[in-house]
Length: 371
Image (cartoon, rainbow, N blue to C red; front, side, top):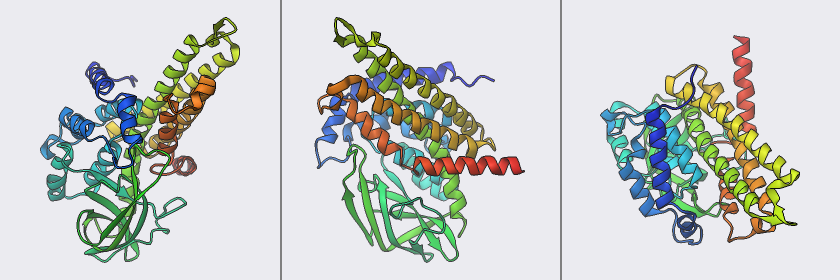
């Protein structure tokens, strides 16, 4: 079985890298990092929309390009490599996928074209504080017409136009579409380790809402959405991890100590080799997840959890070892290592922490073996 991307997908990858190299240098990323008044790179967001990337996985009948999940995986990897400071993940991985999983035809026709055109920034609001979100832990309520409760943190919640809110409805959980610019919504910007991906606390006080899917069936729909988003996040993490390895290798080849490049020393060789191995483990699992996602295979829950775990570990390790390879310079503000360290830590908890996904993987494997 060939898990590699097609020539067309590789061409898309090359064009995405060229675009982001030109439009999203680390100097551009720092413009968002260094400015508390700027939540994302507006010009880059416009460019991404014009490239059609937001609609890559959205069917043509709903205003997208209709390319498919694999194409979005390719784009996600390049976005991660560039640590792009735009709400791409929140809108394309979580919001759009949530609408495609749970939305009615009318809801899809209304929302997805706006997403594909870059006219709508979306978010998924699940968490209500420390700890893993579960069906039992959700306290936000939906009475059939309005939502009340608090969600914290919500990635890109301060800039999103609409959010899919996970709320309790009766004895079950529902997914509810809420206009964040409408009445009954109060947003407070939160400070995080990575300001290039903004977060907010959102308080809903009888905010008008519209259900997605059947009443009380939302938790299953949330899990399906998270499985799909996890694969895209894995590719974004993989892109960041690969870039960390490239940075570490380049520095090791150029940095001299005692008359020769530090890449010649065994300790540095081992660091680079370990980074490479973890990245390749992450890549193999991410490709498995991409296959399951693109084919809608029944193995998707297992593949998604495996890709999420492997990619999270790879990016976290690569980001730390990149700093260590750079030595004293690696800890300075001027060197770009910290941009990837910040993003690695942030993506490591988005959509659930590593422990949550490990437990999810074990549970899925146990269920499969018991069947």
